[in-house]
Length: 199
Image (cartoon, rainbow, N blue to C red; front, side, top):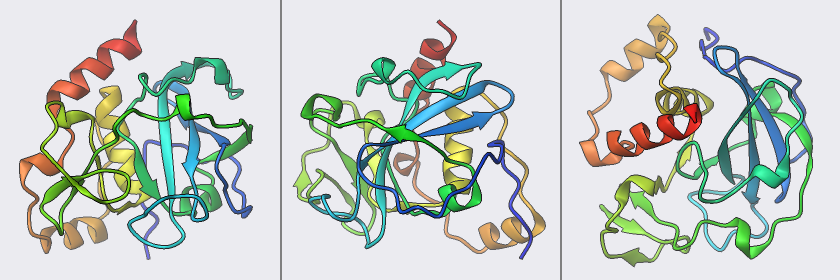
C-alpha cells in the first residue's frame, strides 16, 4: 500500500497505549508545532464509536518549540471539533508523546455534540439524541477518523491546502457516496478559528 501524503510531519513514534491526560505534539511545518490531549480512553469514555478509540482535543496553540504549555489549553480554544481516533497517529509518529497532564471537569467542552450519521441526528457524549444545536459548527463526528482525515480537516482549520491524494486514495474516494454538507465542518467555524490562530 502506498504511504499517504500528509501536511503533518512525522516526529517520534511510540507504541505506548495512550491514556486520558496524555499530551502530544504535532508538527505542521508550514505553521509550527501544535498540541493535543487525550480526553478519554477506552476505559473511561461513557460511550465511544467503537472499541480501542480515543477522544482527543487539538488546541489552537501554535509554537516554534515542541514543548507544550498546558496552561494555554482551553476547551474554548480548540483548533477543530473533538474527534475520536485510534492509536495509528502515535505509532506512525504524527503524534509525539509530550507528557501527561491531569484532566479536570473544567477541561471538557460544555454540552458536547456530535453528528451521528447512522442515526442521522446529533448526539451527546453518551450517544443520546439531542435537538439540533444552534451552533452545529462546534460539533464533532460520532465515528472513528483516520490520521489522513485529521490531516485534511486540521489543514482546513489552519488555512492550508490539503495534502495531495495518492492515486490509491483518489480511486477509493471515487467509489464513495458523497457526504451531505452538514457532515463537514462549517466554513463559518473555520473562518473564526483561522482568525484566532493569526491573532
